[in-house]
Amino acid sequence: MTERHRISYDGITMEYIRFGTGTRTMVILPGLSIKSVADMSEAVAAAYDMFTKDFTVYLFDRRENVCSSYDIYGMAHDTYTVMEHLGLHGIYLFGASQGGMIAALIAAEHPGFVRRLVLGNTSLFVPGGTEKTVAEWVGDAEKEDGIKLCLDMGRAIYSKDTFLRYEGMLADMGKTVSADESVRFRIFAGALKGFDMRSRASHIKCPVLSLISDDDGVFKTASPELAEAAFSGIGDIRFRHFDGYGHAAYDTAPSYREEMLGFFLS
Image (cartoon, rainbow, N blue to C red; front, side):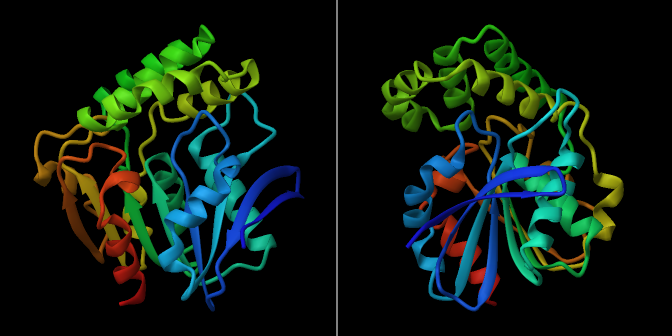
């Protein structure tokens, strides 16, 4: 059974979903999204069904009340504050894309809070090519062109074949993007500009698994070696590479979640 909650604490209002019956606590921090991930709670629970025996799983959305200067450091602070208020500790943390940046910050700033960390298709800094891609999305949101925004994001995050399969669905979703959703997206996407936490990487003390797509259309790197170099400074880290699934491998690669579960339970 999937539960959907809204919590208000210390000036923060945030939605989260919870499912699973396991004795360990797993937290998912999703990537940048136009729509609230809490609206897709049943689909998320189905996708992570293999975790529910061993884990009680929480997925946290971004806070509801945001200002134009909101940044990734603020996202990490707010998410940690809410998790601590809920009494979570010793968590198994998975962050995808922008959620991985948030997760890495939480692990660096609260070393005893995270037991194991999976960073999915993310980076500890934002390369120039990524900033250019995200700037295009921000431009679409500023124009409130939901269809173009959804299609531009789809082209960047999915493999070519997957994008062609989802193109019609993405265009339909774009028709439903509201003005408020465009504003929120603009703020969250803008938070990526200039982000760089490499100087804090050594503060991450828990074991880390980094899942990398060698054909990532968002975090573009010239080679697998350069992709791994982005995480230099983290002491206990291992890597798993995927190819042919694009940035959204966390949704489309068949063995992605099996890799996560094996690492969490090892």
